Length: 100
Picture 1 (cartoon, rainbow, N blue to C red):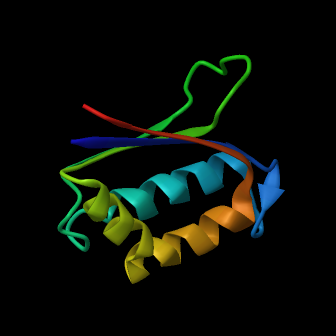
Picture 2 (picture 1 turned 30 degrees about the vertical axis):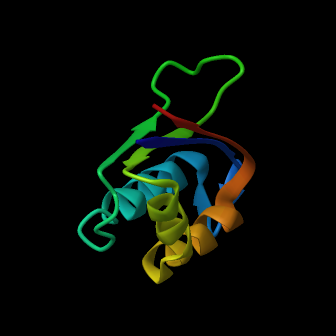
Picture 3 (picture 1 turned 60 degrees about the horizontal axis):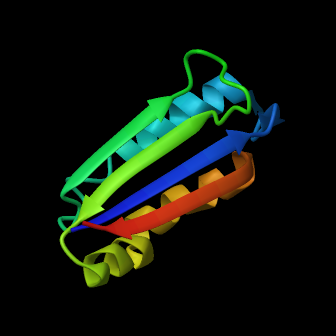
């Protein structure tokens, strides 16, 4: 199984909205993907609630059966729609993929 974790820090304002609103929209968009992309085995989106330092505003945890499934997810048109929004609102991005 492949685990894919992404963490973002968002811009204070982007796409006509503040950081909190964009974080909520990211969560909504990402959470809608599993029924659209069958290779997703698990998906969880979290928003920072304790203002950690250093902070990330949004975290995505996903699991896939294989590397090929992760690649298919990343290339999927529905995922790419979300990526388009995320690129507009994110200031930084960190990612880790690992196999268990």
